[in-house]
View 1 (cartoon, one colour):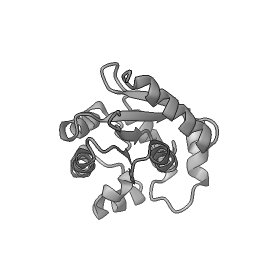
View 2: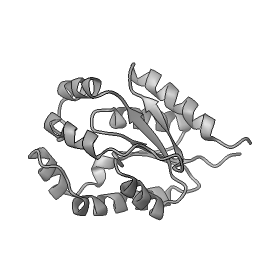
View 3: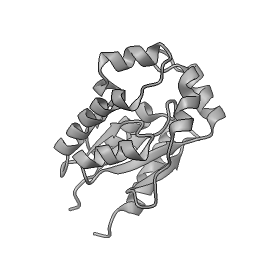
Length: 171
């Protein structure tokens, strides 16, 4: 039997990490952790005020997510985390080397529309440009897949599961 992966569902705000993450975890039969829950209050206050986080803000958050992921090694799990820069993904992998990334990707207009219609989230649409400017797609040497976010959550999850199966070594 193959060991379930620890998956980071990544992407800019509004791509559906918080929606797809739990669906993917259910499909994989592993627990889900919401990456936003790992943010210190100061980060949430900063983003709520429309101020992008800087790297100094992100390191403790990434370390907390990495600690969770390391604790799930060999057991599997799914966690959402924007992980926009290669350096952020490297930081996560330094804590949990076997991580696999699912990059939820879509065009800016679709993502902005989704952000405009969601309620009760601290990330304002005004920060979307900084998210896209910061995004560094997965490198060819990074374990992961890119999944298009068009369609409904079940379709997106189906694509993610299929893409992850394509990464899996033959049993």
